[in-house]
Image (cartoon, rainbow, N blue to C red; front, top):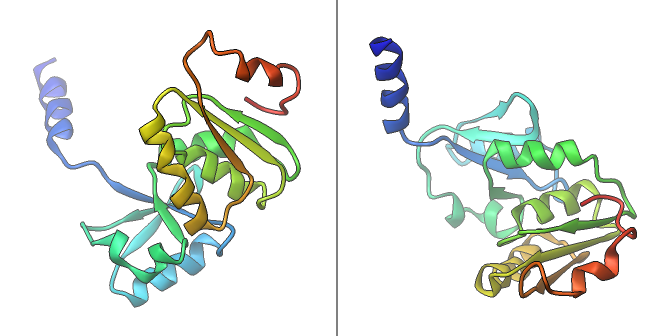
Length: 166
């Protein structure tokens, strides 16, 4: 139907929402929401994503003291839902393939209360290099990033049968 198609196409023209992931190592989402409000930024919880806040408008979020202090990272709610679904626990070993710049690794580390081990594998060394400064800002020390050469790289096989979650 033409009306449905028109509606869907117009939805694609709207800007994507801006979602933040509250760093559980720094505080709870409601505390972050209040701190953002004190800085004139409105944010609401996102249903189905326990750490997500959706920001109204287009504030310069990465200039905020809260960002520099590691209270939050920009991360879409869908990625946060994946981290929730993993059910990661303290002390576990997690393998994150295609880790990129490490958004999900950071989310998992916070859920694990920075206790355990996360192995972040990726073929893109430049993207993976962005993980270390993000982890430092977030107060995360359990992530080891490893650039691999692809599916034939033997290093990930060392963890076969030794990871709690992949």
